[in-house]
Length: 192
Image (tube, rainbow, N blue to C red; front, side, top):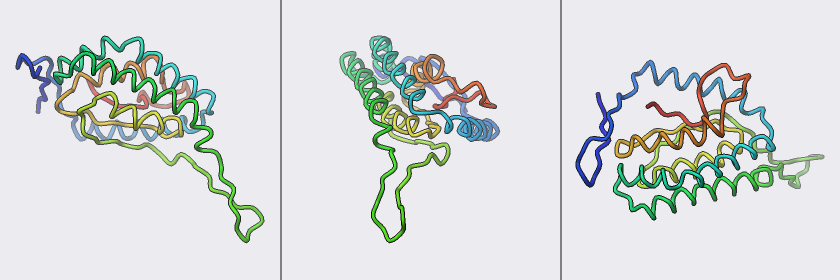
């Protein structure tokens, strides 16, 4: 089944996309699982550096991302730029605070030593509404990636192309899978 991205202002079809087959979905999930095994071993310093790079790229590309949101969703350019910059702030926020948020918490019990530990458990899939195509991804992915959890996201039918710049920002330039990863997946998965 073809999925179309239609400009809400002109009514023109901007792009067409093929839906995932079941085999492609299985491949994506297997890639995410394999990549998580390596990603979970990265340290906060490495993840912090990558998350700050993602923030930098979102700021650098705010105008381009705003134009894309305007074409795909009819979002005013100023609102699109604001969304890109809000995403950058979110990336910086979690980059600067994740180690503190996820530090072990020592608690009083009858045992000699007790604590709460936050451990990465696997890949996480987000399926969300998409009136804010970049913000919906970043508000979920930034904390997940900083917690060493592999983040996967669906793409909305209303803004299929909007996934492309996020993928470029988070994967191609900022979040490449570790060299030792056995797969080609990136922390956030889309299909162009």
